[in-house]
Length: 412
Image 1: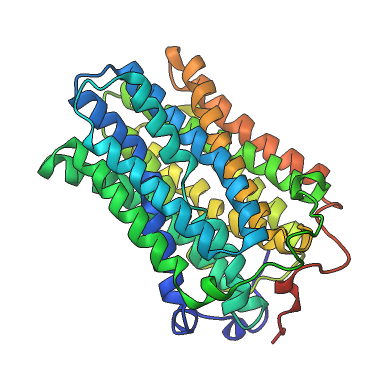
Image 2 (image 1 turned 45 degrees about the vertical axis):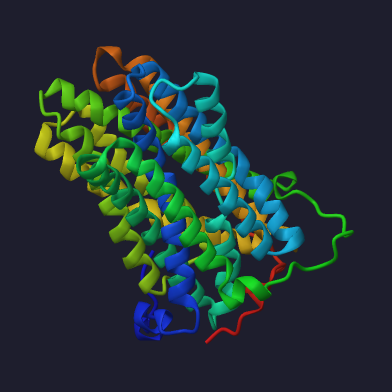
């Protein structure tokens, strides 16, 4: 994969951010999405501060993650059928009320109430990512600028997952554990409304009519293959958290449990910004396979249980290819999703990645009692499965005819 002969022709981030509405859309999506990165740690700290057990905290964290992932395709389908403003506003209000109720509950509240509110907060997670990815073709001029936007989007999500836990720890230290849950309520409301009230989101209308028969994206082989590949990638990412924990215990270096995921995220942030800024030659499917293969190769050193410094350093390498893999996946969706289903298709990709992360954490945790090797094997296996799926579906991922609006963009 090499850069095109005239890299100066590619869109730059400064040019993109100066376009009307782009900064507002991106800011709203990032702020509104922060609670997804904050809620698991906020729930854990709030439950423990209230006298709850680690087991209860773990169950609530898992319920939040799974319900948030499962809710996204549903909301994505509603985006495609009814437009963005109403769906984003409704989910923002529901999620805000759920987080506010969790923050207001007294310590020792009935477990069933906590469970129901946690599930509601997760299920009602606004589909901000899917909405933004549907809007990118509307606010960019050409395919190069669209790819730059997707790269910036992927990098911004890494900022979310770096800043979210840090914000929780800061709030918990300064104001108490339940304050972080209250902050989730404020952020999801403010950020999502900033996105939902932006002119592109207010005026965007789905193609077809409400009575048009729509085919689910997952009924087609292309989107289904991408979802399966992202599930494998999610397994690798989820297991990496357990690898980090096991390495921290093996080397008696507690900071590794935080530094390794942070290094992975920093690598992904860097990779997304670099990839989105340039125009790359070669077929998109080749980019998918190459980035997935490089991600797998970057994860192989985890099998050697490297010493602390190398463990952090090597975590940067797979991260460099994570955001480019996601950029190319979502760019491919524009070609593969049936007309009028791009929101649902994007939501399925997000859900597949999230469910894969939950599965990877569970699998690696189940086999991780004897050291970091077994969780590392889960990580590598997930990434390898992703590569195999993409390789097997290579022809399916190269449709001959454009189908959605972004492919109508003027090429410059």
